Image (cartoon, rainbow, N blue to C red; front, top):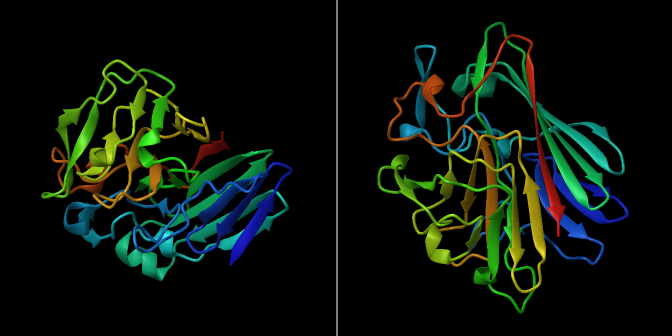
Length: 293
């Protein structure tokens, strides 16, 4: 079921399957979200839980037992329940069940709250530990934005601009070993805050700023100035992705708490960089804000 939120400045559509943002339009009808073309990628903004990226052989060890969890977790394909709905806000929830316990042993509740305030969209994430033991998890966002936004532009007319200097280059994903290599880094910024997009930057999959200093980033056209600004202060890392060597007309901006397996990690779930920890009955709240420009 697709739910519409509407303000005086924007319209958003959220699918209860995966609690996925599938559309964000301004008052002029400009669509900012990627529209799920299977030729390139048949998603638009999946939620990543309880893993971000891939595990080593899709397996991990939790409290001495091996579990197999698919890449990016299982919530992106789950049907969320509508807990609250108004014209500008919806709260969606997915909680543990027998199927999730078979691959991830914790009793969790994951809620996403979408709120339209004028032209900006705020996405809140609440993770609650409903179990009898402490709980570990990873959480990530994966919104895909149309690039370009207009017909007279190209992908390479767009840039990424951080709000702070980023002295540490991005970590390279090893496509052969299917892991992040934190010892292999590339500095595209070179003392600047801006990266002009090029398709070949993504020939090795995502570019991953695992030591990010910024808490917001802009994606916009140098010709028109149109694009989006994404605020991600509650997330420890950020990645950018478009399908490898397909010249796809979109870019994903991915704030992460947790990430794919790294070459310097073992297979213990608790060893994952950025993993989050919840005590019994404790909850964590995270916020992501998307502002069309």
